[in-house]
Amino acid sequence: MKLSHLDRLSGISGISGDEQAVAAAIIRKIEGYARWELDPMGTLYVYKEGRQRRNQPLLVQTCMDETGLLISHVTDEGYLRFVTVGELDSRILPGRQVLVGENKIPGVISCKAIHQTSREEREKPIPSDKLLIDIGASGKEEAQQLVKVGDSAVFLSEFERLGGRRVKGKALDTRMGCAILISLIRAELTYDTVFAFTTRHHAGGGESFAAFTVNPARAIVLGGIAADDLPGGKGDCALGKGSVLPLMERGTRYDRKLAGEVISTASIAGIPLQTEYALTGTTPAGRVHHSRGGIPTVFLGLPCRYIGSPAVVADEADMEAVEALTMALIEKGENPEMAE
Image 1 (cartoon, helix red, strand yellow):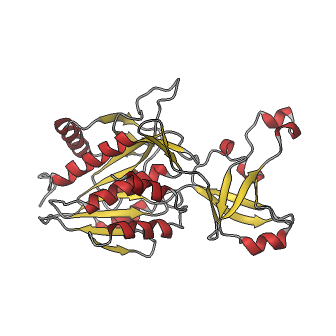
Image 2: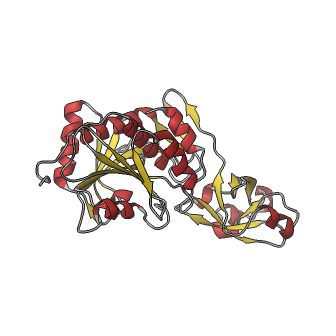
Image 3: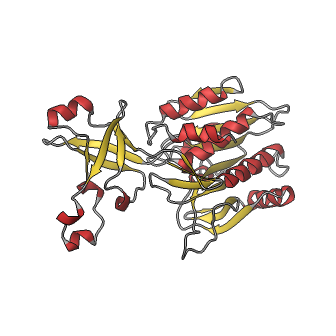
């Protein structure tokens, strides 16, 4: 995987329901390597021909969208009220720089200065509905000339290397999967494979649309998963130790045979893999697994620190491991127990 793909994708604005720019950037990267189409919900389907046909489709998918803010009101003083899109920790919002709307109007999420707050206020996180975005407008009329209700706002966060092989940037939990799929599409494959870049993960569960449309025999879903390797953590999901394979999550028990195939494939190929028996939360793969009459699905998680923040941290070695494992699973061809 080229890190330059991830650098470019991380910098694009694309909150849930507004992923068009992300899809356009991906199309530019895969043009000429495969046939593609967009559906009415913005999902990008890529049909990659291999040297051999499959009896039943294999779907490999990831999400394009990111968490962010949606402008809900302009105050008389020229400040912007907003609602959050996706799970955002309100503790990290005050003082953050954002870019608002198509024209990327710069702004800052405002709050009281620390010396102006009471002890009680300092001890509690500020609810997001009490925060405002300051774009420097002198009043409502000036603000409305720059932005409008319904505009999205994303965090301003540069993509950077941290130390040796770690990187920092916004939206890495979804855009890493996009960068990996781009590399797979540009590679030579033995078997036909359908790739999908889905929308609205953080607002509506768009990953199920692709599963319903393609109706695959099985699916591989890529995405970020919260690392637990900070001091005091359990360390059962850590950066630099490869992909994470959850066997169960809230509301979903993944297909045992397919999970076993992933484990054996990684072992034979010497690809690092972390097995996490049960997640307390959910992943995009759960909605795929429950689509139609049920689709055998696995989730290959990319460990991330600080998911849902403007500065997600990830390890390049994990991206390489997930790409290698996904390629190995694609190259296995038909699953004898699922082929006709």
